[in-house]
Amino acid sequence: MSKAIAYIENTILAITLAVMSILAFANIVSRYLFHYSISFTEEVTVNLFVLLTFLGAAAGIRNSAHLGFTMLFDKLSGVPKKFLIVFTCALISAIFLIFVYFGYDMVSFQIESNQKTPALGWNQWVFTLGFPIGCLFGLYRAIEAGFREWKAASQQESGVKA
Image (cartoon, helix red, strand yellow):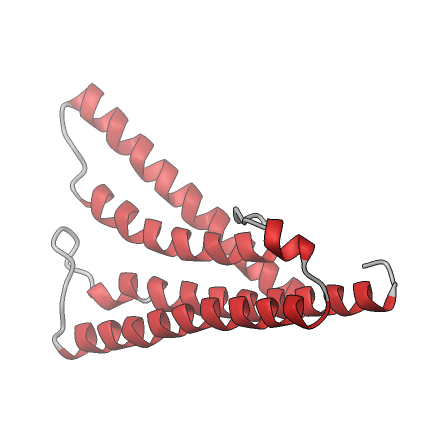
């Protein structure tokens, strides 16, 4: 399951980055060659950047790529280390849960009020949906990382190489 989710994450990240790059490049070329700016490119790239940010954060958690201060964590073992793992996992999960809750609330409000994007006139909730979806991926990856760290700490205690 984790590989399937990683494939989905990576595919969405690649497509999002490609679309953003193509739109930004097309706008630059259009501005300098034709002295005409494509108005909707900023709207699309800014909204896709939100999706890219939160899915990228989830992928970073998956790959253990986030900057961490591990001096204390590396020196701990046994129950204190496991407590720190649970505490960290719970804190990150709580933050992502709060983001999912308020993201869902924001999307619901935009659907109810029929908000449209300024340049394209598309439903705003379509773009805003990237925020809670990205946070759901982050929540999944935070819990997965907590289990992975717990397993490594347990194996370290029993003398098995992780």
